[in-house]
Image 1 (cartoon, rainbow over the protein chains, first blue to last red):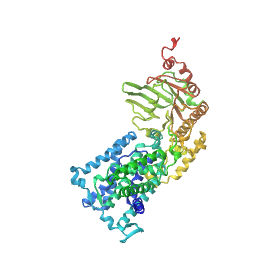
Image 2: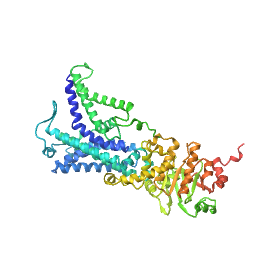
Image 3: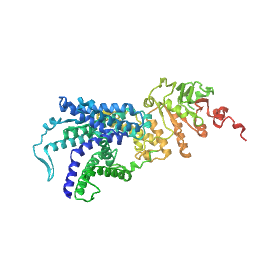
Image 4: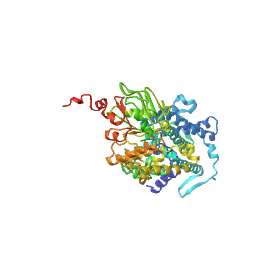
Length: 328
Length: 275
């Protein structure tokens, strides 16, 4: 087994587009879940809406630079549509409605009824040429040794991490301000916040919209990287990647989603490489074959999450003291 | 004795009686849950600048009345005015901004915020609490001013040394004090305290009561729900007794305590014949 190659491939995911895009997505989810206490189980819907907003604008003759704002705008509208009926209710209702909304949107987009607009299951391809045309990097490979990316990929990676930095800056400003204190107060006790004159519904809606827009940005990054959007790549699973990342890094912490995403993708890809190598060398005999690797990866991910919740529920950056506070 | 307390001396001791200078006026307020009438108050006035205790047996509708008045619940019908302003249909957060702030029977300290953050979140004039204000506004000078006010309030309530601890690490009694101190930072005209002494040890209860009296002496109107008749006797200027959703008696504490209807409500109408 080529351990070095496994490590390089894992590192490629951890430094590359998947980690950056999911960091961005998780930063948004962390604002909603970690700071405001909103259980948004339909984060993938915001990613879908952002990516499709951008891709369809190009498909119908618009510019990608118009498409990106349209994608973001669509995610803000989605936040309002989901938030208005549910944010006045208890937290679990938001969870139910968002997980359902994510699936409804995906199924509508892939339906033959929506085909004239969305091209149904086939989606949209090669819509991001304008982005690559702006690439200032000369042709070549960037990196060290075998840990290298071509200029196109490296351009996406640079932009994606720059967006992560911008989003982190915004979250830092927001959460260290009195605005952030109010949303944390809402997370702790909505009625107490209300009794102190805070418009709880307004803050929750703002949090849902800002976090959703970051999800949409992440969706656009992934779509631009692949030059491809198809409805079935927006499975509910993507939301739970983001939740795993937020919890791994530490919910309600500034750096948690970024480090969480890097570690998550390193382990997730490293695991795939290791399993592929191990199966090829016949370590497991006929008990595990190459088709089983995908599902086993998810089993191990689930076990990892359970282990985390049991032994380090505050994640990497969370404070144990804060976690153990008696909130009765 | 303040003039406000003094003026209560001439008020007749009967349910729904008008007060010389009412801050809060309730009329025809009704809230039922299915067939159960939880609150059915014909008329009730709360005198400005006094401590009014709301007493009554369990299930009398005291907390429901609080919920209705502060916008946490909606009545089927009824009217209520705070200092002449109509409050019907106004959401809870606006009621608080208009000057009526409540506390809760089960203390709601914001556990994963520090004691100081608990205080600061109650301040009303912070531009940094709006989305754009937090990014572009000059909120740090306001923050400094509010921190000074909050520190003074924490000192008054004996919590200053805990300012940087998580509120969740306070004892039950300290949380009650924090909740009261926090309510004051909203700068209300009237505070509605739902069982402020429940679960608090006797020594701390005394200091809590002194704080409540001090609030009145500062000109605040205090309405509070209380079960302990000794406490009621000690600090109330006026007592309102509810039973089965209605106001059944009003008057100074000594008078209400001897009212046969009140004794009936607490002990049941048959109490005279217990062997």
